[in-house]
Length: 335
Figure 1 (cartoon, rainbow, N blue to C red):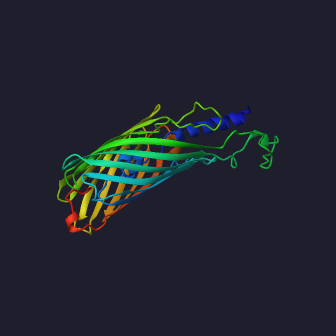
Figure 2: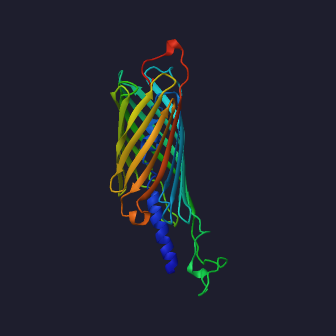
């Protein structure tokens, strides 16, 4: 195999090894479906839309762009006693490098949350997904296209790739425990197992290459500490094959207005992704809309190439709450 093609395969393999790990967001609390399928329907309201955008390492030759969007809804709100049955869908997309190595995932979610008592709720969720990975060679160059002095883009690369695209089914599940004392004091503790079926991941015919199972453990919380101030600590640990990630931090929320229908709050926070990045974030919570903006400061060995510039990220969550009849009203915010 020609040296230049060997280098190409190494680079694609390196990129594929990274992409074989799941996408991740610094504001993981703004992307519930990528956190745990059991969080489907576990929110204050009836319908929820979430969107996330991340641009990473734009200062290096192979920047990463990641997008995620989701929707979930309670299927029989206020009709099933002591239970929530919810469903939703998710789309993930990311792309990197001159080869435009990309990944797209379409997933359906379903979860059941059971009320244990007035403050405790246990939910179980299932994710059924379909994924595709692909790369292109249009922007790549090969040694056969050099005639000794000049590069000829019209010349044949004389290379043959067995496949530039792969498709696979994917199954994931999770559990979540919510303790909710009030709208402002609550926490979620969850565990999820992604890629239960170890889907095949190969461009070159090696059927032993599979997407490793991933364990994810999360803690999201909110605590009222003063009349107008909440603290929102959160922790995420993920392990997939030999890769692991630990993110810890939180936000401080200042309530500017707490009147019903006029809620307004400002958030400022910070996060640490162990041995990788320091993250600063700001956000606003207005009525049913929450927007968060963060920026990664790279601290890993890649900082030599990135000059510490990890990249920006935006997260948006919008919830819809239907007007309930007075006789259907319940004091619990999520039931």
